[in-house]
Image (cartoon, rainbow, N blue to C red; front, top):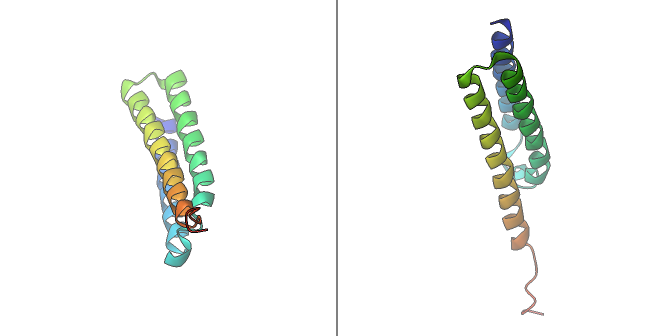
Length: 100
């Protein structure tokens, strides 16, 4: 029970800190910082993997395992989407070979 409260507290604190960090970035810098944020999203994946592994090893609660697996899936969607948007943004700045 104590570990569950610690996990919930970590989730709440990290959500608040993440919101405050993103809220301070001007909107003009969001797109250039996207690729840097993709690296930070990888940390989210590692955190989800770690918490899911702990839940699987120590608690064996089906709900904890399902929520952990969903956290992994959502974190990976975030990483893949971020890289997709960054690739799309970079394609906008490539010169067309036909124009040369």
